[in-house]
Image 1 (cartoon, rainbow, N blue to C red):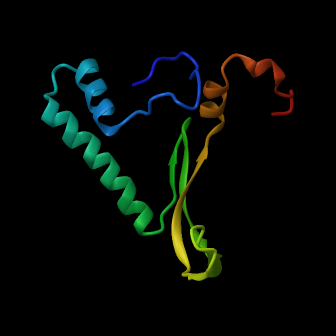
Image 2 (image 1 turned 90 degrees about the vertical axis):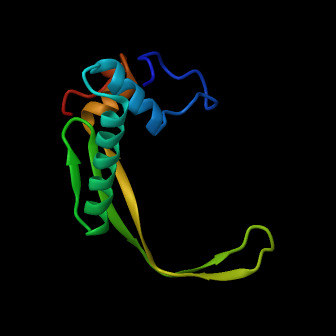
Length: 116
């Protein structure tokens, strides 16, 4: 997992599922790498299944996941410029919680208003 240092640029490396598994193994050496992989996969599978059923997922202090419905529309192929019909679809949406936003923002908590 990444350090607590702010990201230097948009070129910063991303955290992968493998990184999460490695971090679990490092933090909890009593679990094998295979055990950690199963745990991470099960969490992601559970989240995916809940969203597939249209359920809202809330992880306190982190954020929430919901499924939003996008209406059918007429789009444009960026390569050719031709109009194309885009079907209606369901897409996952994540909204960061207050605690996560504050952690990401760092020490700039003094700029928030007293009414928050």
